[in-house]
Length: 544
Image 1: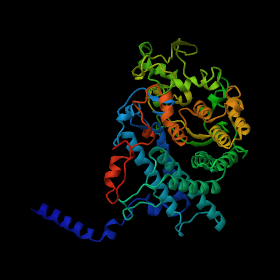
Image 2: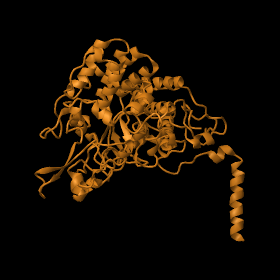
Image 3: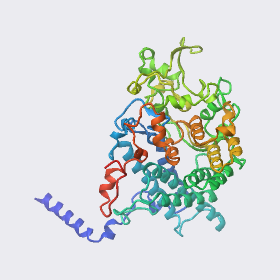
């Protein structure tokens, strides 16, 4: 009876307190790291930005047996689902995609987590009591705007995914707390989303340096994103200006000669870019790299890129007879074969293009002849042989792009690990070149467009092109040749209106019966629709 009385008393106290909503929802921080006592000075905001970068780093982490980035790569023209998993299988047959799909729901929620975290930084930076630690009014303003610029760019990064992934979505620009929670969201138009991204990216462009510390976003990233945004908005002249601003800055250059840790080994300049992803390693092409660290370092991220993109070759009848740790060690690490580059995309390369060479595409597997490992033998070859699309499920010997190779640098026995801890490039100058070429082509400046296309192709010893070859289809194929597994391919196809046509034409696992024109947008998660009780949120067409 005494216990019941105590419980009743506590419950009554809570009910009485709940009558005062302001007091009930008032947050009283108990730790050292809390928004109200974190965002008091410049160092606190830097810590907040580090958390925001950490959220974006999840792009490459494991999600539903693949990566978050896979959502915008699989089920397009140049990538199909190979080793199926529940949330991924619908991207081989979009008729099975629904509003509770695991990776669709997880990514939607994750992106709004990024948005709200950015909003928190932007709004709290306006507090006049913040000590920006600059030492003068001018230096304080520089520090403040550098913080806001990074947060705004990352907010635009999230809205870019939302816009191309789901189309019109709610536009949130204020920090959501217990006092500002809403359940009456409306979906902002594409025009409204683009306008806000333009505001955010312009601020970042103007308040960040062309080069910042490794790991940070910078003005070059902002301009490259603006170039793509302006192409989406049909402002091709502005897209040209932004792209050329980066290209002509003198701060970056395409890597055309061998460099870095593997220069004494056979290879080529294109492969070196991915073996040496940071400026400190001599990479002058990388615009944005996300720093990573080994497993025992706080803030490290066990990313999943090779496991997602490398075939599950150890399940091949011949290869599985070998010692797997040794097999993985000598072949770039373990793969699970979740995603594969389409045979069409591989066919877009010229045979002598460095990007299709054995140093950049896995064409055979090797194994050491003895314990010393000084010599190896080729023990199996990859192939793209199949009779029907069904034969592409768990195709263990499908070739793969070697950009994401990784063996644990400290413990070779860990070569069988699914994850990796290397730094990850998120943007490089070659993409800026391709955006510039597209902007110029759309303004009928074909001669200039050829200059930038041929610069990218010359690095890989692909043949030079002529004016007659320059059109949107060529540029889309060149983007794939250069950026396959890096770019968010679906964004590009949606932006250019090519998603449906090219998915049917080039993805070996899709046809007119398994993908629809309206699959260019994902379904709004059902939980979001159901919880928005204050206003009706419409589902995207085709998913009702």
